[in-house]
Amino acid sequence: MYKPLSGDGEIIKRVVSVEYTSPWAKAGVMIREGLGASSKHAHLIIAPGNGCRFQLRRITGSWSESDTPVTNLQHIRPPHWVRLVRRGNQFMAYHSNDGRNWEELVWGSQTVVMRNDVYIGMVVTSHADGVLCTALDFWIICLTA
Image (cartoon, rainbow, N blue to C red; front, side, top):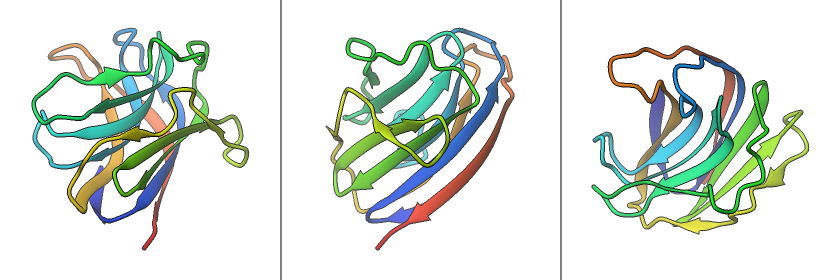
């Protein structure tokens, strides 16, 4: 589920559950430049076997990068809140136990150069070809001018 975003904005989601189809099954929030599979993106997810992770693709068609080398949130499991913020080409990721008190992820602000008009929404993947994944959530999109 997604919608267009022009300029700056943020998305907040409470990930209630993620089906364990793989340690890297994912549910969370994403901002992406296009709808193609290899589009530039930034996303913040909860993975049942790998906790809360900030991941991004800086170059269309390249591999995604992850905060795995610096993260300290491998223990995070649903239910948990995630928040992704875009300010120009800077992306910041936050997590929260209650949806009110936010902590920025250790990786800090990351640069992904994207056009002004992008897409913002939620992401769910099984991380296993041909396997569906179910996630329950509550989400809010906050668009700012």
